[in-house]
Every structure is written in C-alpha cells, then in structure tokens.
Image (tube, rainbow, N blue to C red; front, side, top):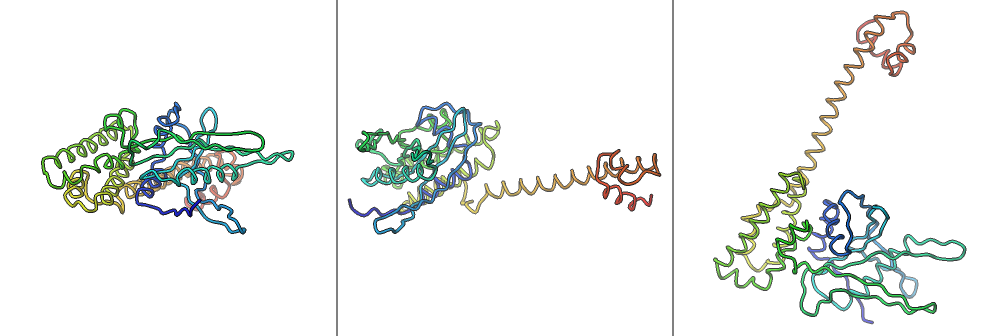
Length: 325
C-alpha cells in the first residue's frame, strides 16, 4: 500500500470551526446520517483529535482527525466524522486508522481482556459523483472470526436549500456553494445566471435572520455560518471574481476576524459588568442588614452578628468601620 499524505484544506478548517464554535449544529447532522432522534439538548463531549499512530520501527506518526465526540443522551455514543472534498482511495484506510486509535484511547483491560469500543463513523463528502458510494465498509478478518462495520456517507451536494432548512442542517450551509461548482463558468459570463445564484444566497441570509429573530439560533451562530460561507466561496471560486464579489455583496463583507467572536466577547463583557453591578447591589443590601442588626444589638460580637445575618465576621467588621458603629 502506497504512502498516504494528509493535507489540511480550508474546508477542513471551516468544518472544525463550525464544530468548535457552534457544536450544537452537528446534532441534526448526526440525526440525518445515523437515524438518531436527538433533541438538540444533549451534551456533546469532544475528544482529543490528535492521535499518534505506531509505525514500523517504533516511530510514531501524528494524525489529526476532523472530529470525534460523545453525545450524552439516554445512552452515551461515540461518533467520528471526517470532511472530505472528494472521494479518494485512501479514505477507508484513514478512517480505519482513526477509528482504531479512538477505540484504543478509551480501551479497558480487565482480567487479561482488552475491550475497545469503535465509534459510529461517517464521512461528509463535499463533492460527489455517480461513483461516490452511499456507504463504505470495513471488514476485519481475525483468528476469532470476521467483523465488519459500515462507514456512513453524507453527500452535501445532494441537499437542496429547502431540505437544509427543513431538516435544520444549517451545518451544511457554508458548503452549499459546492452544489454550484460545475456552473461557475456560466455564472462568470452570464449576469442573469449569476443573479439567480445571488438570489439563493439572499434567501439563505434572510432565513438565517428569521431563525435568529425566533430565537432558534443565536446571532453568534448566524454570523459564524455567514463567515464560514464567505470563506468557502473565497477559496472554491478563487478564479471567479464575479461569483466571489456577488456572494459577498449579498452575505456581507469579510468579517472573518470576526464579527461573531466580537459578539460573543461583548456578551461575555456585558455579563461580567452585569455581574459586578449585581455584586455591588448585593453588597449594599448586606451592609444594610448588618447595620440594622448592630443597631438592634450593639453589644453583640462580630461573630454573633454574622450568625444572625448569615454572613462572615470580617464582613461585619468592615461594615462597623464603614459606618463607625
């Protein structure tokens, strides 16, 4: 078997950004691919995505999976997803390497038995053709018998905008431009056809805003989806200025550094400021209670006042000094 070279692409980066920054978007994808019925309220626990694979001669080779995680529902299940722009012959080998390492990372040895649990695995293909399989299979021939499991396949190009929004597959929106890739030449030369593409992206933008207004998604999630959509278009249509500029004019300019993160950080700042204000108000109320308790029982010790009010003795002492009582 020949050497397998692994390279990261901008699409891998977008895939990981969506998972890290808007992890809840992956739940509908899991439901769609694996036939699950998660509500979206389940906790997602991500695993380390860097694995060291043992090679012949004792060397180790580092590989980075796109993502592996657990979903804590009625039962805990492990999942492993990879994003692939096109089918290649090394995909199954890499999936098996990753799955094996994920299983080994959490393996258990008891009474001289090693138990490993393989994750539920799938590949998101951004491009597909008639030869792209609907699922793949890994078969292991062991001295104890044969074992096989399926690697499921999701083909993002096959989903219309209507299906994406109906099934809440918002995770796929940044990759939607792949469904138009084979018509880039037409769009670049024909303004009427380019206008139809822009209208689709106008629809995407408007529907995301509707979801945000209803509280279905946050403004942070909306901005992240738009940012990542722009990033994919910038790379996939890098030779087509009219397409890049047309989509950008609809979706908004380049806000990659990074309107969504700014919103999140501002929210955290406001939360801290509100917390400090609430803290000040609570402090004033506590001082008032201590003041009243001391006036009522001037001979009580700090410890007695603290027990009466429900605070610490040093808080009583500070209040006494503040009011000179």
